Figure 1 (cartoon, rainbow, N blue to C red):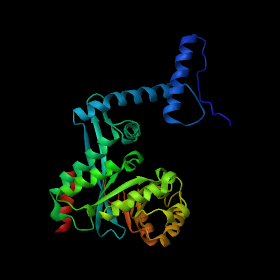
Figure 2 (tube, rainbow, N blue to C red):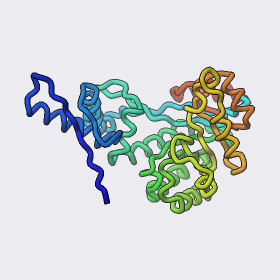
Figure 3 (cartoon, rainbow, N blue to C red):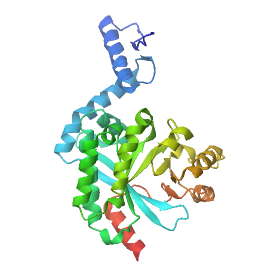
Figure 4 (cartoon, one colour):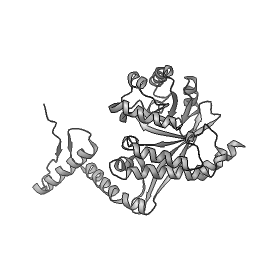
Length: 308
């Protein structure tokens, strides 16, 4: 069996000594081990800043929980005829005293790599319950609050059981919730994934596959998976119609129509894009055309006005 070796590389300038070269090579190797982009990585200032930022975020995660720095924004999901609000996606945000506002793309992968990931999922769920319990009369039976779960969270049956129990203790219905999981996390153990989904179905919680199309998309695994909804990644609509003619998106939607799985397209930002996915039979959309992520107070005002 061949062994894959990983290498951090530092290239010498005239003024570099051996110790500096070794230090830089180890920084490049550290970045490679964390971000896994190739078999080797050559040190430069960008690599240094990336590793430095990673360490800063890791050092502040504990303080974020102690100081209540995390908060939740919501983005509206609507029917593709643009007439009905079908739900919201809960999106965690972080404003740190030392580092300021930290992008989710920067801190979420780091949190997923720590034991704090369970706390994040439970925090988001509790905040959703607190917020939407206050406007229960303004959300209908089919309104879904979508919560993202990492593979680590979703595969933890005890954690999932506790989350479902938390919902049951609230004055919201379990049918008001959807758990979103990334498709690349499903292929390793479809049987076990289906067992968990089946248990959630008994409690009327649906499961959506997030970022569909970016991982291991295939009809074979879709046929074997008991998921209820596919969230088509924004990469398939973002350049329509200026650069992209929409043929790949059309193919994805046609591919899934026969599988009795509902579709939601992410990243819709224009009327033209919305009309296109509506013409293809995609039932729902999410994106800036419908709303930007916003505070619960704004969501509450929109839902109260919508129900009038």
